[in-house]
Length: 417
Image (cartoon, rainbow, N blue to C red; front, side, top):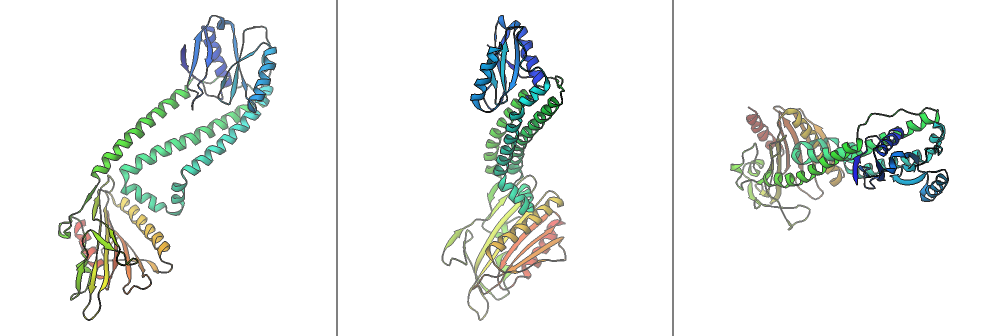
């Protein structure tokens, strides 16, 4: 038994027949085509009798019953069924040099391909549907929140970029491959219907190229799995509990309340949800890193504040800080943060203060969201801003929503120097 790679494209009927006949003249008779996901390598076995035979391809119609009827009719003409190439062709062999050809003119061959073309277009529609279902989340985000998608790619470059690339190659390659094959089959039938028999194309070994690409993708995904686990081991780390040890522009909760305010901060690792009094949700201040955004920090501070002559109320500060490798990457992160907060607040709050784009001294871009939950005494504000390659999200709840922004803007400017 010997195996050979199919050197011609599947729509090159003349080329495949020529190849089969050349191997037959060398003493190899066809044994079987691969029935796996790809046509792949074709099995032949040595045979002296094969040196005087002819091979021809016949487009497959609908179902096995029609295939049996055709095989019976062709057998009477001296042709016997040998193998099937997927759902495209039946391969027939004839050892009688005087036996008539299966098709005497291109028009009849083109007519025989009618059902094959119909199946190809159905397959193309099925592949498009499959691709849409597989990529539905990404496509939905692409249309509803494209800025968030770009932001996530910057923040998680090492993890998302290889995965997205592999996904697009697999899905895009499959879709384009099926569509291209369908178009080529349609073009072949059109030329046959016009009485033109297309010439044999060059030997490009498309199945071998497809196999090598698939092998590369499998190795890539396996390597990516180990890379993913290795990256996760170093890209995230907790921050020190003492804010004085944080090495990035930040403000503390004590700086957000007016002078003379009594402040009792919650434990550094926990925060109480206003909507669920008494329930503790565990957070931890953490730092991330990626190639495109090497500095990423997320901190949460909360507690009880009592202004002179008033009762104690909840105050909260959440800060998200990112420093990218280039200002244009920071613009992507800024746009993504704005879009993310817009979606978040639309989902949580039916009505909130208008989203404001503010021209603020010392900052390149600034957007403010103002809102307040029902039953809360103090309003909330979320600032999303950018200065050069630095992006911040400052989420505040308390009596003073302006002073913290002023402090942070100054510290961002000092970092940019």
